[in-house]
Length: 330
Image 1 (tube, rainbow, N blue to C red):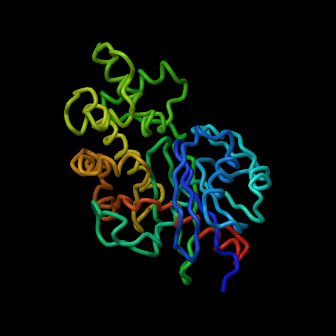
Image 2: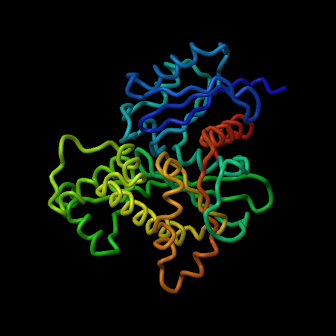
């Protein structure tokens, strides 16, 4: 019997914090979602959640957070809990052990544990299990990571990255116009400026500006833009998500080439699963394959969209179990 159960695991984004109690390996109870803006600190959200559960003996936890994990300070630029102290959070939450992972570090570690019905394959040939796996996903921000399998054992190691900070590269006349609009506002136009919820709004603004269309009232929310674009009830919204899908195809292709991800490319985040049908008919794949002589190279890479509701929790569980039993974070 493993006396470290039950455990607390989470998937914390820039907008929502999802918590669960893991009562046995990958078995969860009391899954709840909180709005990050409703709590002053991360520790306050944790303690509020724990009070609502029937488990009063939680001593170990893993938190997947939208931040690079470098020192004691969480650099959650898209979160109201920006610059939270990890050690202080553990102390305030009264936990014996608490590990933090970048949210896409956790999402990467989840890949081997997601059931078959938790992903949809949209392209490519058979997965080569021994090759690197690329994980990418636009949501409140743009996350990515690479997953590597041990050559002998069924063990995995994830390499999180801050690729959303890389510079946006235009590959068409229209995208040069988008870049010019954004560059006038931001000295550095990162890829995340485009490929995120706020990015949808920025593209919407740019399309309006380029076409000399006045924005009436407020800029639509990301959800409104995707809904109106998919339903073709707003031409600007449709143009926006079409730009989004093309840019995402190019950038995902760049990541696939950099990581040589014949183990598969897995798309997560909050945006693509919500527009999946439209996305699969978009120019995403045309842009993904548009690498000249490397087209046939990329066509072999399997591409999946993650549809599992709480995948990062699976990765948090794997990381916490490895930490408690082997004393390292994979």
